Image 1 (cartoon, one colour):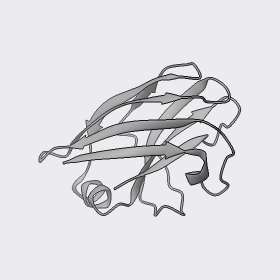
Image 2: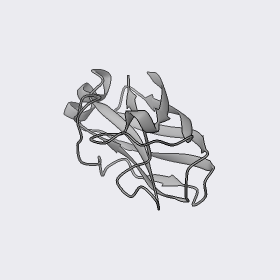
Image 3: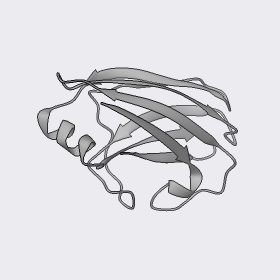
Image 4: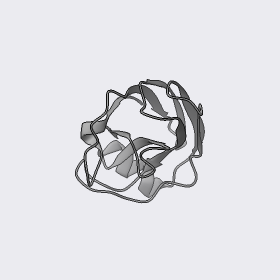
Length: 119
């Protein structure tokens, strides 16, 4: 299963962020609950610090990061985000039902500068 996720500041919760930053990320979920993340971002207002998949949460909610899927991010205003890991059966169901999201945090926005719902 392939999800193409578009991240932007307007999707950040609980407070949208005004930023020109965007990202496009491919999230692949296989039959064994393995997740692979590959994508790129541009125009952050400051260097990226971390990226996470969070869940469960709707597009207007927030949730804790899913620790079993660690992501790495280029420490710059543009670069790559990638990682892989394994979900539980419950987390798999949440991802398939659109209840997970990906966000990239920056030095200027430590709670997240851009976000996109995985759906």
